[in-house]
Length: 281
Image 1 (spheres, rainbow, N blue to C red):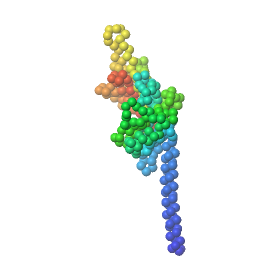
Image 2: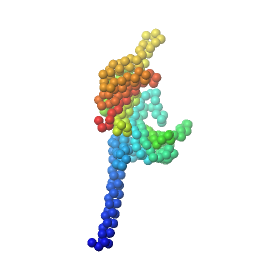
Image 3: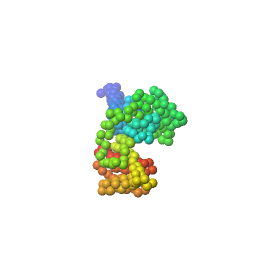
Image 4: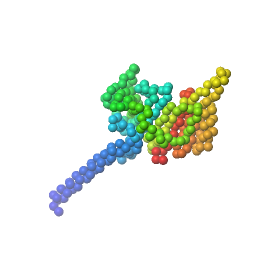
C-alpha cells in the first residue's frame, strides 16, 4: 500500500480515537449532570469515585444552585414548632432545608454569589461578615461561609411549615421511640448524610413537662428527668449493643437496622432522639 495512504489512515484513526474519548467524557459528564437532578440519590464521579450529590427530593436546586459544588456533606429538612424558638428570619413555626456542602469557591465568592442571586436582600441589625440572607422566589434563604475550610451552609426556608409536601419525609419515621405524657414534640428532621458510605438520619427533640408542686410543699412532686431516665434504661436495656453513659445521660442501642441515640438533657429541658442507618439497608 502506498505510504501516503497509510499515513492518511493512521491520522484518521488517531483523530477518530480522540473524538471517541471526547464524546465519552462529554457523555459521562452529561450523565452525572442528569443524575444529579434525581434528588434523594447519590451520584459518583467516575474518576474520583466521590459522591457529589446527596439531596432530598424536592430541594429547589433549579432555583437555588449549590455554587461551585465539590461534594454534598449533608442535606436535611427540619420542622420546628417550639414556641420558644424563632427562625433566623424571625418566624415562629418554620420548616427549612439545611445543606452543608464543600464548594471550590472562596468565602468572598460564595457569599457574593448568593447575595447577587437574591431577588431581595434581607439586612440584619448587626452586620454579619459570615452570612448573607435574602429571598429567592418563594423561599427565604441564608448562605454562610466561615472561611475556615471549603464548607458552605445553606438554609432554604419553605413558605409554609405545614406544606403537605413536607409530610412525605416523615411517613416512614421509624417506630422505635415512644414518647409519653411528660414529653411534647417540638422538632423533627429527616436527612441524608455523606458519611460511612451514605446514611439516612431521623431526629426529634421533645420538651419535658414539669408537673410542678401540686401538693404545695415547696418542692417539685416529680423529678421528670430522673423518671424518664429510669424508664428508658429499663425499656431498652435488652436491645442490641445497649449502652448508657452516666456522665452525659445518653442511651445508645441498635434496633431495626438503626443506630439509636437518646440524650436526656435537664439543662436544656429536652430529650433528643437521633436515628441513623446505612443508606443501602
